[in-house]
Length: 270
Image (cartoon, rainbow, N blue to C red; front, top):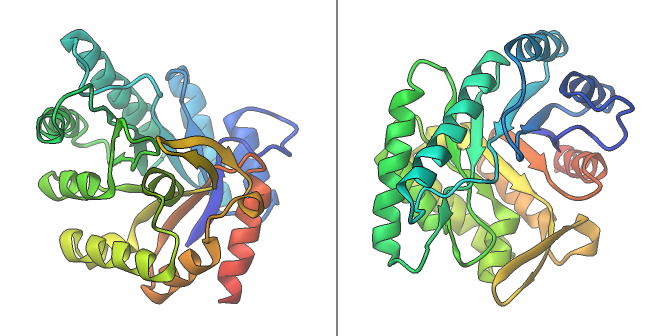
């Protein structure tokens, strides 16, 4: 498993993406998810420079598409805009050598879950067709709030239906959303389901988000540092080890690299 941060580490003096990649290496971390949460504003030349830096330092990259996405919006214009934002992130991510583009699919919008699933699936299929040849995997993310599309089974089924689409498993979101998925047995069950439906190869290319989470009856409220939360990250790492999983673990805790390093050190001791 590779461990890294969601965005430029807090301790990086420079705040550019290339600065962040260099800091990741300096910290003895392995990967970084480039955050395009407020829009894809990186130039082609900057992306090429980032690729050169990341390849020279052997730091793996992924990208997170903007937050302003709803593939189940009432307005078809908003759906098309959402699709374009994901595709824009995939295109620039491909230039920088990122292997994955993570995105939140959207909201239920008072529709039945079956209807929401069908509409999201249609959009993701079109994005996947447009992104063919970019050498980047689309990663719909499990969501943290109950009004958001993105239960584990929905994301797994969506990925099973489509080519070049694999899940981003935000295990902390799943815990916040359900109030469960915090025991070794529950983590084991989730991994078994991924393996059964998506195949054992999927366990060799995982993309995982993790952080502490403050949550209530509606799900996620805010991110916390892991030691300040109730999330059972030790058993989660143990289950990943048991399944011999590989891929990226991206830390989204407020302290970013501190928790990422703690997780990496714990994992290496297992």
